[in-house]
Structures are given as structure tokens and as C-alpha cells.
Length: 318
Image 1: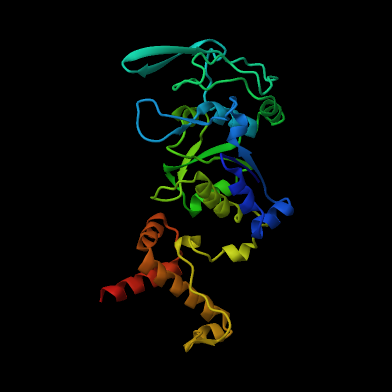
Image 2: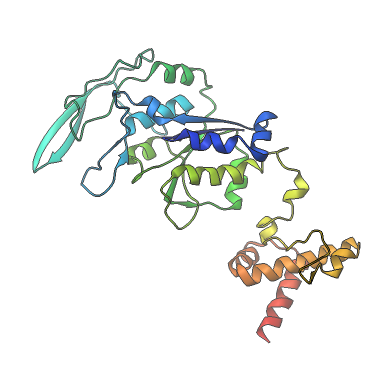
């Protein structure tokens, strides 16, 4: 699997990939990544990547120009075909009650160098259209990719689809992912319309850094890729089989007057297996009863688990 991460701060991504199991997976070539700096695809001398939103409001948005070029370099393809892409397109900017019309034309010559730009009629003014020719390096990277193999493009957003273990398993089956790390107030809607396959949220809260959200997704996904972690280590962890993981103990046998449960010292594998299943159910009922309901409704649990759930549920009601 390969993951491309588009970010204004790629060093955050590089630091994560430099340690622990992730570094070992990269070294063993089970997993690869590419941290792409969106600023490398900005055309002006200041490497501008953000601007104020149309219609007003607080904060800034990532400009569509640099981000689209970064996406193309990463192997993304537009979801919809646009007619007349080489023709002049009218753009409107309403400011102070007066309508100002801007026009821009982007050449389709993929051999353009970094200093070759499209028309930017308003210079450095606010509301400018941030469009320029594809960077030569971006074009070369894009041309080297197979047109039949489309990478799945994901934008990390608090307004996206909820990320869970099932979605992590689904994404782990992909050969290539492209993750867009948002910043400020987000990204231009046209990038979502043109390129994004999934908007994903890692929880009902807001982060300042899209990189943190991207790393949450990466960490959950890469460990499910074959050979990264032993299969038996994944078989009974939280959310596998619709339940949370059972509690665990290690040496010493007694710590601060607290003893390891006798069943775990018995050496009887079947007793241990059933005890752990009971503990998984107990904890899930106590902490995440919604998972129990979801598992029952979806038919996830086997008969043994259902019998234990009903027994504990009845006991709690008495």
C-alpha cells in the first residue's frame, strides 16, 4: 500500500513515519508513503496557499490552484469531465456592491516550468484567481502513473463521514490512498467536487491540524495491511467482532496488593477463552452499549456471545 499525504506541514508526517512499527513496515517495503508539500505547487514568489472565502466570514481557505496541482502530481484524477477547459472562463467577485469580472486561461501544455504562469489580471489583489500552468515536476509525476489505476482521495474534515474500524478495514484493502490535510477553515468546495471520493471525520470535535486527523486514519489503516502485524494480535482487539477488548495483566502476579485473576494462571485455555469473552461483553455493555445494540441488529454475534449478552442484560435488570 502507498499513501500520499498532502500537507502544508509535511515534516509532521515525516516525523511519525520515522519510528515504531510504521518505520519497520516502510523499511520492509510492506508500506510506503509520500508527504507532499502543497506549497511546492504555489506559483507566486510568496508560495501563497490560502485566501479569504467568498461571501465573507472568519478565517482562510486553502486555494484550489496549488491543491489541485498537488493532487494531480500525487496521481489523483478528476471525478467529472469539464468541457472547454482550455477556454476563457468568466469568474465573478462581488466586492462593495460592484461586480468585477476576472478571466483566466490555463494552457494544457504539461511541460510548463515553475515560473510559467497563466493570466492573473488583478496581480496580488484580494479575490485573485489562483491559476497557473502545471509545474513541470508535477506533470512528470502524473504522467508516470497508470491512468487505469485511480487512487482513492480522502479529505479529512469534521463534517465528513464518521471513521471507524470497519472503514479502516475497507481502506486497508486499497492499493493507494491520497489524504488531504485541511487547515484554517478548510478547502475550496470545487476541490471536493472535482477530486474527493470521501470526506472523513475522526470524531465529533474540531482539530487545528488536518495532519493529526490524517495520522489517526493512517495508524488505524496500516496495521491492518497484511504482514505489518501478526493476524492473531488483531483477532480479539477492540471492535473486532463488535466488542471491546478484554482487560489484561502481566508480571508481577501481585502488584500493590492487587492479584492477577486466578483463571489466567490456570493454564486452561478454554476457561481463559470464555472468561475473556465474558469480560469483553461486560466492558462493552458498561462503556459502549451502542456497540452491543449495533452488533445484535447487524447479526455480528455468534450464539455463544448472544447467550452471554442476554444473561448479563437480564441480570442487570433484576
